[in-house]
Image (cartoon, rainbow, N blue to C red; front, side, top):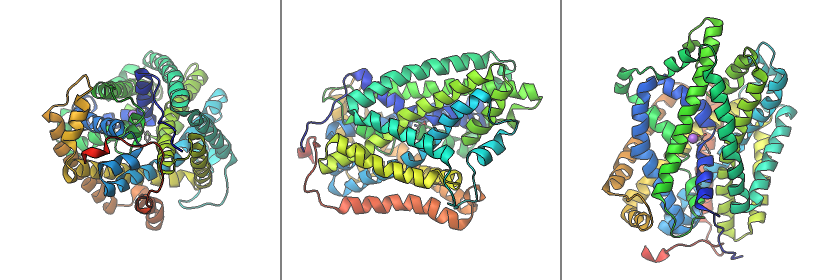
Length: 501
Ligand code: PHE
Ligand code: NA
């Protein structure tokens, strides 16, 4: 049971995997709209400050914890302090929920690669998406399976699990070496096509025109920090897991800077592409860009199909766009599932392949049963909202407060990073991570709770939000507590310098 822990093949391999995890659907369909909606060009100010004062400091913390304790989150937090193990399991459980629905969005995108070829959505992409394709019913319904989602979903799971089966170096690293350059090429082609469309400049104007007054609004700052946390995938153990496969002497801060800036660059590139396309459509229809600007599922699966239909060479553009979504999402999905695989390996001493199989069977079953039905769309929407607000953001807040204040481990982690890193962590790191990050996250928590009790999310029925929202977010915490209470009799290869407690 005690095989030595796996290692990345090269520093570039680790970096590509970290970038692959960060760059996902959020870059393509979330950032452009959030920036547009929160001050346009002026949004870049709070956004960059959020990156520097909270995003990068927390990313660095996760890298150091992962490398130092050489374990997935439960084992890493357990070595920080026995009761803190529950934070690790919380992160693993959050990853389970996210993986279950993230794969579904990839399955939709896979279908839309095919739909793009004949523009199967006809002239009402909205009705096509919710009706013909998803057969969406009332929130909370589970009356039938939707084979058009189930089959591609099983395919997505098969590909993901095969990558993980081959392990960190020959699976994850290899996949990212292939996928990230491919994504860059595809996306580059898309952006060049987008900015050469008629009307593109109108779209770019709408996105980047600075509204400086926006900076006086608290909600704009909340949006900036929220985007950074989501986009860097920090706060739920992915980077702890990936960094646990680093060598003892690897550079940490330099890697974090590269990954953070690569993710943001990709985000801005996506903003340029998406808003050029919206500008084209607005000019075409003689309406304002503001009538078209939207984000998330509606942007990718309703607005884009509409635009693709009215674009010269639209089929090719559509295929490239949905393939980009699939690739960007796949490397993120691989990273969240690896958190669970690593936790099972570390905790039980099972081999990697056995861990992939057990995690894979459970995840595939839950993901398919819960989300490829006529209730899938609304369930996905609700679980996504609640797990983001009261899973990811709350877990990030708790982990920072525990590490910085309850355990007071930041100086220790700082020395650990500085021993091998290119960029030295100064006192600024302690301040940003120990003071700024918890304050901002705490404020975000109060803010979103207030909205929650003001009105039901998306106007969904209270009983539905009770189980699909609060139930899911609370459920992961209960599962985490239970898992952390089981005593460890055996485990795999975890273990950093436990002696310094
Ligand atoms: N960081 C990813 C993005 O920007 C989001 C993500 C969420 C990735 C959850 C993995 C897990 O899209
Ligand atoms: Na991202």
